[in-house]
Image (cartoon, rainbow, N blue to C red; front, side):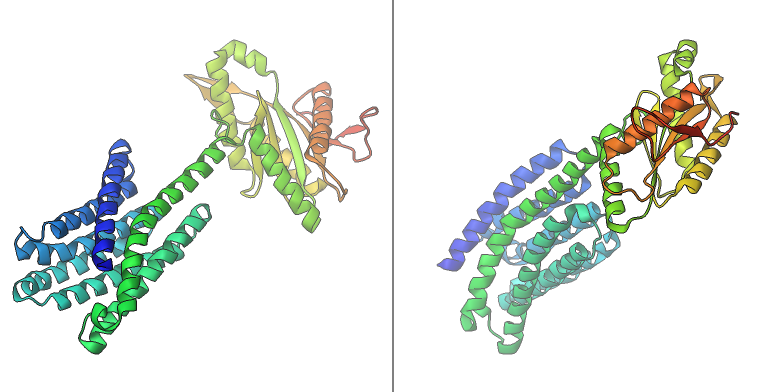
Length: 399
């Protein structure tokens, strides 16, 4: 009675999730992983229909194709995971081989009445496919979806072990688990029902985790220049300050402002100004190191972080950038625009208790001094400066 009740609950779950996931896949047609997941549950639902119609349908269907439905379903689930984590798609031949190789046996045994063999072969194929899926989930280096992947892998690992246990019982006793090992039969029934509902929920959790992180990252990116915005810069600054407090390695912060940008907007229009800002952002990314961080603070003002950088290294880096900018033009339609920039720089210089507000204020004071000094120059903020008496000094000659 328990086995039949479990089977009925599982069939109902398969039907419900097949409808929901198919509708989700229809609404999100570009989501290939969701589409394969829906196909897996549709295969399971097809098997449930064959199961419920066992008294009226031919044995080739109810005892042959019916045995294939779970294997096809879990094969689709493996493919769905492989697409989602962007690896393992070449391994799809293993579930496909299980389906193709087992079908002739299922059809032949459905006519000869060897149902125990069919069930054991099905158990083995399911154990193999789910074990393969567990390996894929646990070997994927994706921190964004780590916890849902682990939950999913845990349930699939239990499922796989139960399936292998069923195979082992039959090979050792030549009898089905329900006759000689009821605890295996009951465990498998419970695992079937739980996995049927947990797997799609864990998959949706995994999609949601990736989506939330993607939205969080988008909220830190400036849409025009595709570099960090003010919020992203604040997060980067906090991370750099945390590393500085932990390891004591100096870093530099530079605030730069494009000179006479209002005149450029008047000459080329705001669309032209936007084109220059986007081109300038791409230029910045090509001249800084891979470990350096660049962001747009607002308008034509940009911020650069130079990790593990002292005063001399920051001076050399900014001078290279400034010199490269002087020889660069940016296309605006059929015309070319030239821009220069003024720089204000500050360095941690081993000082304790630094905050992003302090560093930003120091770099801004240095930038204002560069503007007053004639533009297209860089100035450092003296570490002994106070807000009332800004002691600033030029490190580059005006070009």
